[in-house]
Length: 355
Image (tube, rainbow, N blue to C red):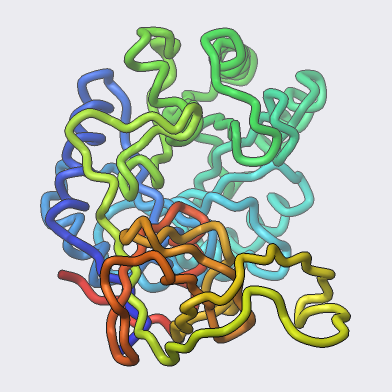
């Protein structure tokens, strides 16, 4: 069935091996982030067959942690919890990342009710302006209050960089995270088991020997999936960047003008679109649309194909200059980026096939 997302599991395993070896060589634990493929249990199960590669399974969604509940590897909830989901956080996450005392109070109450100690990592904002304590005084005052919650155990600090504000990890800003962890250990007698220095964007610091030595964890998703670090988008030696391939079926093939005919208003998404006159085109339609993936996140492997546009369920391609004469029923292949992978894996209308 099409459209389908093909996952080359052997290439994916190789990528994981390379990243795991790189981190362990630098005395870092690996939290493998599973959110991009919605913690597809068939993929996760294959990747963790060798338990020595992955130290933690990490995801932003409780729904995904539930899928992995029977895998005997500690699980981290990456997105700071909502108050409304604290019951499930305590049940399905061994560790959660947090930045709000009120939520931690709720977690403490649920953990006490269930006779559990819930482990937490406190988020620090080093300038990317997503989640975390931005002011040191605010952080330390809250650590004192959190430390008094008897069913909450603070086990570390973490930061996130590049995801919102595009701020790059550096020796300077990650040293601030280490310094804060050391202050907390000294002032509150708390052992920082995890000092997590970010995601795939921090990998380039390893090659430059600029990752502070006390950073002992990274949360890695995209580098494993697409074989590249995310600070500068550079490929990682020994990895594959073609693990995932989108395959779509041609459902129409006709010659048509390149400019719509008639008075134009807004398209289905409320946009006023301008069209370039390229004369008559050989245009094919494939059975996928914006409900599954956005324009700009998938790229024809046949370089002579141009993606012209898309509605919710149809994507139009210009195949005028292609060597192959595409017919209805033919398959067209695409590479994808990280945003495309997120969308395709989330869409229930895209078949996922491990090859």
